Structures are given as C-alpha cells and as structure tokens.
Amino acid sequence: MVQRLSIRARLTLWYTGVVVAILLLVSVASYSLLRWHLLNDLDASLFTVARALQDVPPADPTSPFPPDLEPLVRGLLGPEFADAFLQLLDPQGRLRSRALRPALPLSREARVNALRGVPTLETVELPPGEPARLLTMPVVRGGRVVDLVQVAMPLRRTRQTLVRYVETLLVLVPLGVVLAAAGGWVLARRALRPVDRMSQSALRISAEDLSRRLERRGTGDEIDRLADTLNAMLARLQAAFGEMQRFAADAAHELRTPLTALKGGIEVALRAERPAEEYRRVLASSIEEVDQLIRLAEDLLLLSRSTAGLTGARRPVDLEPLCLEALEVGVRLAKGKDVTVRMGPMTPVVVQGDAAALRRALLNLVDNAVKYTPAGGSVVISLERPPEGAAIVVEDTGIGIDAADAQRVFEPFVRLDAGRSRDTGGSGLGLAIARSIVLAHGGPLDVESRPGGGSRFTMRLPAA
View 1 (cartoon, one colour):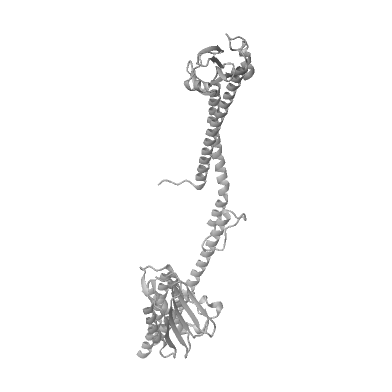
View 2 (cartoon, rainbow, N blue to C red):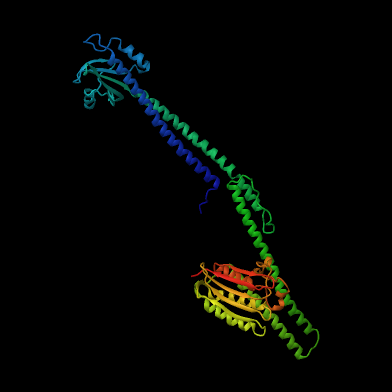
C-alpha cells in the first residue's frame, strides 16, 4: 500500500510547484521582453545611421558616400557597431556604392516599399550564413526617390546577449526553486505548528476527562475555528457520555429494585417450612416482578433501537387507523378509572415511515395520558394536517407538568413527582421511546402543559 504524503510535504510540493510555474513564466516573459528591447534598440540604431546618410549630400557624384563615413558611423553608433553593413542603390536596385562591408540583398518587398517612400526592416542571412538586421530606406529629393540606402547590423551581439541571459536563468531558476522548496518547508512547518500542538492536546483528552478543551490562540483564523469545532464536538461527547452514564446508573437502579424484591421474597420463603399456599403467593409475586423485568428489558431494547434510527423499510402509513386503534386501547386502559377516552377532530393523512413504531409511540402517549389523569378526567386523540405535514395530538386533563420540567419528561427513567412513581406501573421509558421514534421519522414531539391544567403532546410528522 502506497503511503500518502503528509500535509506538510504536500504544502511544500504545492508551494514549490507554484513558484516553479511563476519563475518559468517570468523567465519566458523577461526573455521575450529583453529580446524585444534589444531588437528595438538595434532597429533604432539602423534608422539613425540611415537618416544620417540620407541627410548628407554627396561631395562627389561618383562616390555618393562621404569619405569620412566610417568615423561618422562610429560617432553615431559607437565603436561596438563598427561592423555595420552599408550600401547605396539606385531606384532600380543597381549598386551605386558600398562601404564597410559588401553585398547586401534587396528583396522585392523592400524595393516596392522603397519606391513608395516606405522603409523596410528585415532579418536576413549574410555570407557565410550570419544573421543580420537589414534596413532599406529610400532617399527622397525633389519629391522623388533618387537612391536606396541599406544599412545592416549583425545579430551576433544580440544573440550572444540573449544566450548569456538564458545561461543566467538556468543558474538562477534552479537556485530559486531550491530556496522556494526550503522556504515552503519552513512556512508549512510554522503554519502547521498550531495543529501539532492541538493534536498533542487532543491526545491528552480521554473519555475519563472530557472536560478539557483545546486552547484557542485568539486570532480568529482557521486554526481557531478548528479549535472551536473540536471543542464543540468534545462538549457534545461529554454530554453524550454523561447521558450514557446517567442512563446506565438509572437502568441499574430500575433493574435492582425488582431483583431485590424478587430475591427478598424468595429468601423469606426459604427461611422456614411454610404451607403450600404461602409458597404459591411468593411465586405469584415473583412472577409479577419477572414480568416487570421483562417489560423493562423490552423497553430498553426498543429505546436503543429507536435512538439508533429506523432500520426497516419506510412505507406509506395511514394515520387514521392508528388513531382508532389507540382509541380502543385507551378505552380498555381507562376501564375502572372513571377516565373518558374519546376521539377528537380527524383529518386523514398519510406519512412515510414504520407503522409498528408509530403505533408504539402513540400507544405510549395514550397510556401515559390515561395513567396520570385523575378520575373524572378525559383524554382526547386528534389527527390534524398542518401545512408542514401531519400532527397526532394526545390531550388530557391530568396532573400537568411544570414548564421548567417539560423537556425532562422525555429523558429515560425520569419521574418528576410522587404522581409519577413506580406505583403506577411505569418504568419511565414510555415518553423517551415515543420521542425517539418521532425523531427517527423526522419530526419533533412537543409538549404543552401546566401544573393541574393537563398536558398536550403533539407528534409532528412530515407528510408522504
């Protein structure tokens, strides 16, 4: 398996690659700019000599170039341009005079341009294959072209200058790349140093001490935002671990009570010989405790599954039959308690979800409402269709809940007062299970209540 490069190495490579690209672009651009300037300077020198020859009247018609031409050229261009090529032609292109160097070619384009009074610049090859820059300029007197002046300059010096510049770049560019790589490594190391410190701090945080947090530098940059994100995650983990510990402690407490009662009854029965009727009473009591343990285990299993989310396939579920079934169960639960369970307004609506899970959540709400509604009270089940989806409402006239404790009733094993004691037969998991199922379906479970004024639980579900 190929080992991936570290972030520091990748940052260094990216930085070096960007610098190499910039250096290459700058080198090509500077070379092109230098070549353009050198050729422009050379062309300007050719025009200077040509104009000087154009403006000097010939002293001798048989020798059109002045006798002091070479000192004139040196004075105009300097001694480094003494190897210029000069030539004078008539308008038909016949040679009239030549100075300094011989045999400059006259192209058809240059002759046509000269007859129109336009100078021509060309790059030509002179014997023995030496490249040169050639200027052909017409000499106009009296409104007509009387001569053609040709001035040429070898490109040897220009090319030598460009070659030296390229050689310089071949030394400086690799040196710049090496320095850029070293600088990139140093910059990447400095930039990632806070991350290294953060990782070291994170290594010292364990499940036993989630209260520690990563230190912020206070600069508000990406590193601080990363620290804030990790600190928020640690806070959530701490809350989750705390909830797990409380849940484990509460579950152990709930399991210990029936187990203790079961063990105590059996021990008392075994201390001495007792009539068969006494043993049957002890066994019947033990069966009740075992049934309570089974219900508690089933509730714990259902809570864990609903908290993890729905595992079965979601299908369209018509909520009206579920509400009617819950009404029947509520009527049976309310027998002998003088509590009325009835159906409120019903608006047919279909949702996408698990019918069995939704039935369990609704039955838990109805059981809770019947359980904590005193004699003479009522429980109403309604099905509404708000714009955002569906809402199943279970409203009772029971003992109510204080506003400060409205959300605590959804926590596992929570019993807020004596009215919600173990004597009612509940384990404190019904509302927690209902809320987990509703959350798994994508909707909240809300409660509106006040002490002595009853409660209103609303399951809000997105419509199919």
